[in-house]
Structures are given as structure tokens and as C-alpha cells.
Image (cartoon, rainbow, N blue to C red; front, side, top):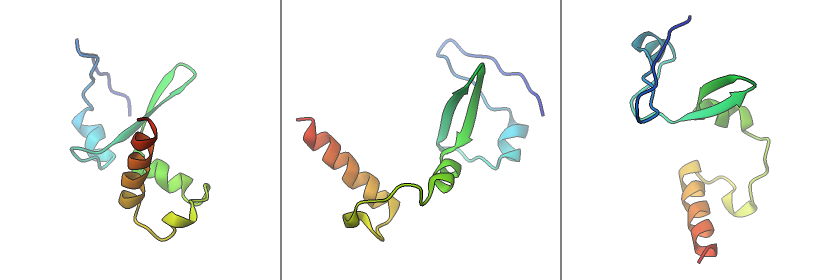
Length: 83
């Protein structure tokens, strides 16, 4: 399916409703932007997480912890180390 979009003065684009619905997107969904040669590819961040699942070993302290907890702790560690 091809559709054209315009880039606004704030460098934003609007996802056409047919594509939005076809991909089962929801308001607030996070997307990953990739550049492949001369193309910009948008992917659901959850899709990327599912593809990467199991490919990286998590530290033992994060074993069996929910992803939200891991992200929160990682952010805390990162910003604490920057001080």
C-alpha cells in the first residue's frame, strides 16, 4: 500500500488512517525509526523487542523482573553515574 505524506514545518508527519489501522497502532505507541539505504522504516518498538528477545543476556539482578522495572533501574543507574 502506497500513500504520500507531507513533512510539517516542525519536521512531523501524519500516519494515514488506513495504515494506522492496518498496523493496529494506538495513540501513544512508540516507534523505532531506521534508515536503510535511502529509506526510512518505522517499526513498532514492541516488535523490535520481540525480535531481540533472548539475544542479550540480562544481568542476574534483572532475572525474572518485568521490563518496566529493568528500564527504570537502568535509567537510575545511568543518570547516577553521570553526576
